[in-house]
Image (cartoon, rainbow, N blue to C red; front, side, top):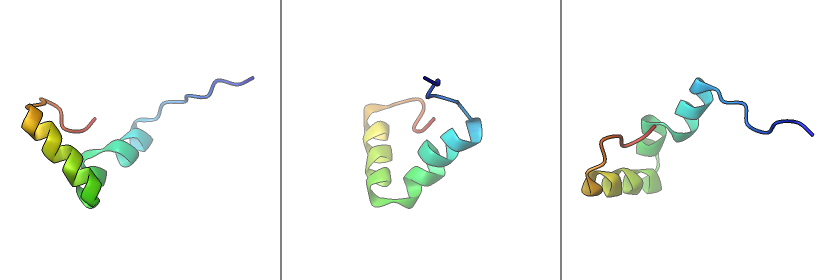
Length: 44
C-alpha cells in the first residue's frame, strides 16, 4: 500500500487558493464567511 498524500505547494494553491475561491460563486461565499468571522487567513 502506498502513501496517499504527496503535498505540492502549487497544487494546493491552485486547488484551494484565493484565486480559485474568487472564481466561483460558492468560493466567494466561503471568503465572505471567513471575512465575517474575522479570519486572519482567508485561503491557504
